[in-house]
Length: 107
Image 1 (tube, helix red, strand yellow):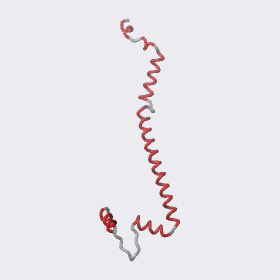
Image 2 (cartoon, one colour):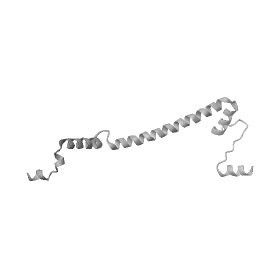
Image 3 (spheres, rainbow, N blue to C red):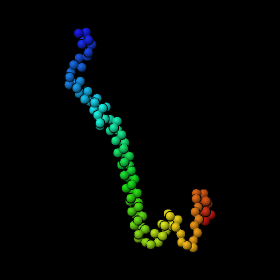
Image 4 (tube, rainbow, N blue to C red):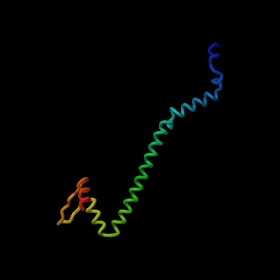
């Protein structure tokens, strides 16, 4: 009987013990435990940021598409600037970084 006297009275309450065990099980050992919820929350936040990025990119591309389709000169200008396309009798010079800045200052 000496061992039973060392156990605190609060542990005799079976509802408290059962509730505590259930809480520990659900927080640590269950499929939807705290760590998996935190991981899923981070993943959801990352996916929402990616979704917002792609929505803005789609809007930007849609505006560019309407602009390109509205006038025939815009399509040629876009092809020349983005894909370095040229006519048969032309030469293309690509200026990178400092060279371009120097030419802008000279003109």
